[in-house]
Image (cartoon, rainbow, N blue to C red; front, side):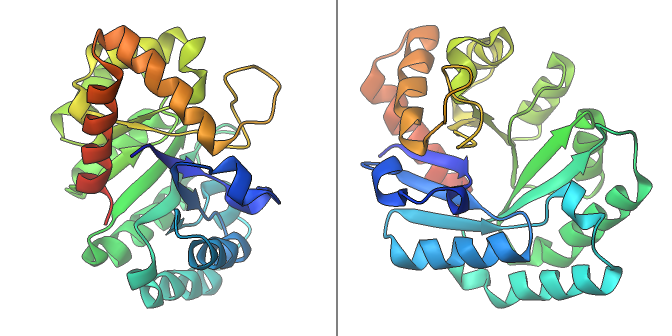
Amino acid sequence: MIVDTHCHLDLFDDVEKVTKDIIAVTAGVDHETNLKSLELSKKFNNVKCCLGLYPLEVLKLSDLEIDKEISFIKQNKNRIVGIGEIGLDFKEGENKRQVRILTKIVNELRSLDKIFVVHSRKAEKECVELFEKLKIKKVLFHCFDGNFKLVKRIEKNNWMLSILCTVNRSEHFQKIVKDVDIRHLLLESDAPFLCAKAGDRNEPRFVEDSLKVIAKIKKMKLEAVENILSENYERSFD
């Protein structure tokens, strides 16, 4: 079983084709995409969904609107496998409201016992520290670009890291694969973004190629890697 643990299927009109022969976990970033993710998971047996609030999207919302979306996620807890995409994005500078809202989201939804799928652009250290402080046990750092001290903290905390399709050309992700215990790794496409071939549209099914790269780096048989990553998914996602 090959699983793409993070993609955005609301941006595709050929979902059946791009998810052929795999399981795909589509992530919401706002109310509209959360609704679409739920619809897709109902329509396709191989599509699962996470509901979330993207850190840059939360800045467009009032506190009341954020509370309503948190309630919406709670209402749909039995239809989701995780919570995300949530996190921090300090690309334009540190933002205290993002931190406050993320803390609220995590505290409000931690009782659902679902994995948190975390976006941490330019805020890797802050995200790791926040989830450590809140003592959260189930965390997946998606597209993690932090330094290797932080990578090892993620591993030590028994959290997960997802490997992008760009692993074929990214020294950073190749080093993560090499240095991190395989029991802490998952696959992700972030499709339609971040294709193995720069500039092309990415597709969830392309994570199969990432599997081959991981097997080569780990010097393991492809089938063994597929089985372990499948077990990692089943252990991490509900």
